[in-house]
Length: 116
Image 1 (cartoon, rainbow, N blue to C red):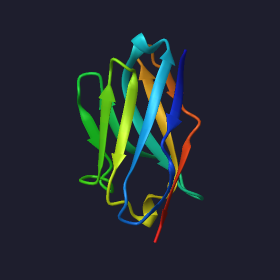
Image 2: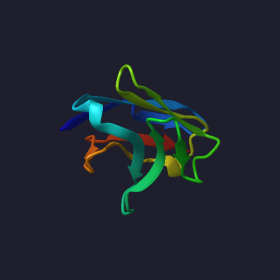
Image 3: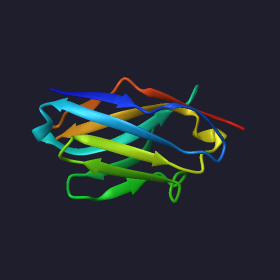
């Protein structure tokens, strides 16, 4: 089992920045990728960014050039640096860890609100 704890959400004005953190604990040796997803009210959860153990990253088109995902493997932590935030970035952001045995684990979510 893997447990995930997110932090760093909040309220920010459009054009501002936030950094989300997600710390993993438990069977972290099994993690082969971590990422961030978000869900806005009335919408489906969508991928924001992912990062593999090998350093490969993937971003949603809507955040490319504004968001950066990074990992500190020594701390079992993944970060999401969000710059040039827009009101449409408002959502609950969830951390996800994928394990090599096929299981996915989710954090509890952290609210990000961008005011116009």
